[in-house]
Image (cartoon, rainbow, N blue to C red; front, side, top):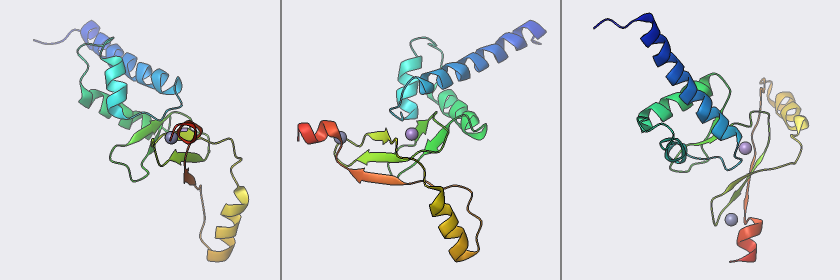
Length: 138
Ligand code: ZN
Ligand code: MN
């Protein structure tokens, strides 16, 4: 059966609404969640939502530069809606990824530019250690 324009529009709206909810959810948290965490949160509101749809929408948001995909050698990709440059602290005990308030050091990029003749566009730094919660309760 040929879809009417209205049906096509409502399908598009549903997809966009799901993507908007994924982005809103990511913007509401600083925990750098995995795709499966996002799926678990949203399947209550969208019972027909599949994990594949969540993962595909995350890929679209990453391509649109609304979300960063972060992979620090962990098993699962994590996602970050804070797209302005910032550094991360990774707890070696609970594996939490925490945003740091430390200013991003532009001088580092100039240093690499000047010493190599390469053009640096951006840089990322991860600090590893024990977070405040884990150091209270070992
Ligand atoms: Zn910790
Ligand atoms: Mn972050």
